[in-house]
Length: 254
Image (cartoon, rainbow, N blue to C red; front, side, top):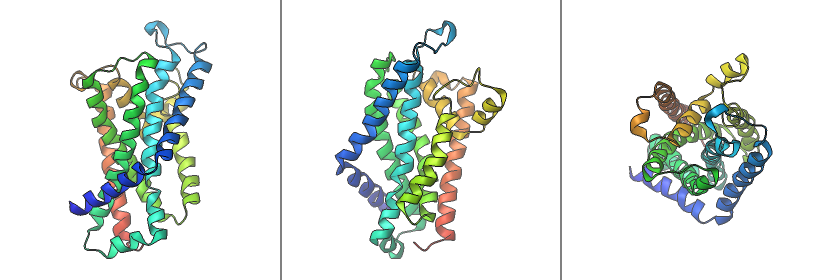
């Protein structure tokens, strides 16, 4: 536990000492949300629900911020390898499991901080969040963040350069987010696209976040779609952490 805490604390401390990184990670999705919301507001319709595109898109942009922050926080693994710090951790009396959990926990907290700050813009989207909803979203952010940070860790462990890591993860993450239901609902999509969306783990993360913007967690546990999305997200998170641990033990050299 000490090893996990030290590594996670180091990740968060490094992030806090880079305010430009926080500024850039928040401004980009904010501008994206404002411009996309304004551009598609006249052509988007949710029937009689009265939901405008800016409101519909807000949970999607929060998820984008969460996913990309979680994934790219693990790029520090490559930087630590190049600086020699990772080699020092590997020869220290710290288990490989502590290494994985510490880095993943630190990256998840970094992503959660950014997502929570972005929630301050929810009133601009016409979404009145209560304290209970925010608390529930924090739980879901942690669950989602652990899974996708674990995925980023597994890929970063196998990469030798930050440029290569950015290239690989951008090719993977952008399509996953585009067909997650963040930009358009699965209802009304063509059959093949709807099938691809339902095979996408980010789609189920999107279901969790979107539903939690309008209801608290208690009533949602009676919603079959929410429970299914929760089970898939828990399974995905466990799988990615298991894969990350397996890769570290399989390839222990840094």
